[in-house]
Length: 199
Image (cartoon, rainbow, N blue to C red):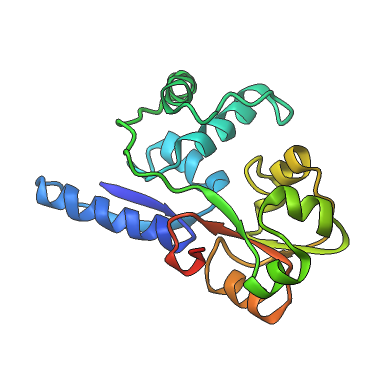
């Protein structure tokens, strides 16, 4: 059994935990870091990999876009039960099955440095939108961020943040952290489970 992982540390760690659990249950399990969702989801459909740790809302919107086009109205929400019900419907269409969602949650977050927050009076994304939106604003994140509804698209559509530039770095990893510290980016994609971004 091959467990696929996305190309960022949290996904790779979860894949290793799945491997430990499956091995303990008597399976022969290996892990394989594949890349972003556009690469590993088709591999899952084809059976090249058998398991992938995933995020319910993000995968739901990925499959929603695949089924209904990139401009499809969002179906994922903060309601886990409704989101998973929608996810299972898409799964039926693409031959995918999903386990019970974990009570643990990790979400996309967007970080600035304390110095940046103090200088501009930023405590929320709404503050960032009203005080820092524009040509001087640089967003940092993984290469796929500009086309993701829970990354740049979401910031632009929900908060009306205009970015002057996007820098392709990583997903909440050392490149984003260094980009924030060095001032290379104004704001960067982080994960709520990362203690390095604790408030």
